[in-house]
Image (spheres, rainbow, N blue to C red):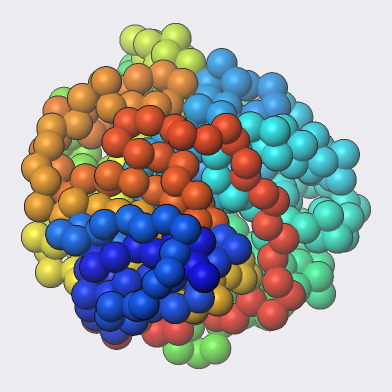
Length: 457
Ligand SMILES: NC(=O)N[C@H]1NC(=O)NC1=O
Ligand SMILES: [Zn+2]
């Protein structure tokens, strides 16, 4: 007998969308087929709704422990389930202390086991100060190591120089873990910022000029060379330019094990929007122009972008209120809107529903070895989201479940609304409510995480 039967939804599978029932037992999907026979302890009518795999957001900064006045795991993961997410992977920085060794890893893991509404994985840091701790972090179960090639914005999370990054990649390779890089050249961005500031530049345009596309392209080139040389597996986070994506694809064709992430804000906003909306849209790398946004969408359609993560990285509102735009905290509040943004913009840009599910769920789960996540195939955890695809709605402050109620998407009309999110078969979000207390589990990566397959658009 099934514990749960989800009846008649439009199931978004790998190849296409089919009307089917899903049978769930012990928190797992056991069968997907039209008109499954009962009995079931509980039935859910999903007719007219679309069933997606729960969003696997492997790029969030929930900032706990230490900076829960910026976000926190309870609020961040509530916002995630409200947006259709069932798994997050938290970045090692913005929490204090950052995750740089076993002890700091365990502190974050324990906090998340208490408070998370979703299952979760954790990133460790790769910085000059913890090069002798990467082994213990791998043993503890990080999905990979995050490093910055530019200043991270936080003194306690330093960037490695090329030599340190090279050594770190060698270690990560031997430990079987991926290196995730924020790829912007520190030399170019800090040099340009210093000159522009010396000339009195303090505005949004000045900030944009201090982080040009070449800063990303140069760093990506270097990162790909180092990954190729060391044989490390590389994940380029939040790429913002078509040129950088093309370089990654070229390296991939030569056998470099690289995957590419972009974020919804690089697909939905431009530098002009940053000028118009200000601090709420400040991020690094910065937003680009319309042609670059088009190039990123083209890369998405072509399958050159493998995963989409939110890079949710809010701060307390005070840090967003500075006259000098260089001093404003850089980070977008977006953990709740990834699926809605992709369903809205992606569909108008010709991205299919299975492709959206791949970018947001399957590919990140596969790439990071999160077995049983990101798919609706039998055997997988029953992590899924029921979406009313035709519902048009304006995103307002009242929708937000994050610690602070700001997001660059407020006022935007979305098409496609999350009605219900299930984690391991249990409804964790239902039309604005959270029926169960936090029950998130820690996910260790499986050792044999495959390279994501090419996406055929
Ligand atoms: N420290 C931190 O979260 N930085 C993030 N914010 C942002 O805009 N880009 C980042 O890498
Ligand atoms: Zn980030």
